Image (tube, rainbow, N blue to C red):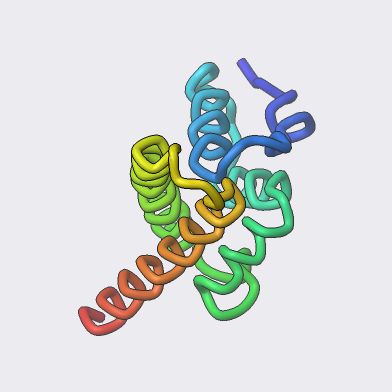
Length: 133
C-alpha cells in the first residue's frame, strides 16, 4: 500500500523544532511501512518542508548544499542535529524554569543560546568525524 500524502502535505509547523519535525516525519513514515519512498525522496521531502533557518543550518553543517551530499551522510547529520537539539531543548527548559524569577531573561535569548550551543556541538561532531575519516 502506498501512502502518497506524506510528501505532498508534510510541512514543519511554525512552532515546531527541528527535532519535533523530524520525529513527526518519521512517525508518518512508520505509519505506513510500505510507503515505497526512496531514501533520497524522503530526505528531499523533509528538507524542503523545513523552515529557512533549519535548512540554512543543514547547509552550514555540510559546507554547501545539503541535498548534494550522499543520503547516508544526510541522515547522519539530521540524526545528530535532532539529538543535539532535543538535549538542548531539555536543558534550556530546565535552566529557564529554575531562573524564572530573574528579570530580564527573555525566551528569545534562551532560544539563541540554544542555537549557538547546537551549532558548536555540530561543528565539534563534524570535526571529530572528519578526523576519524
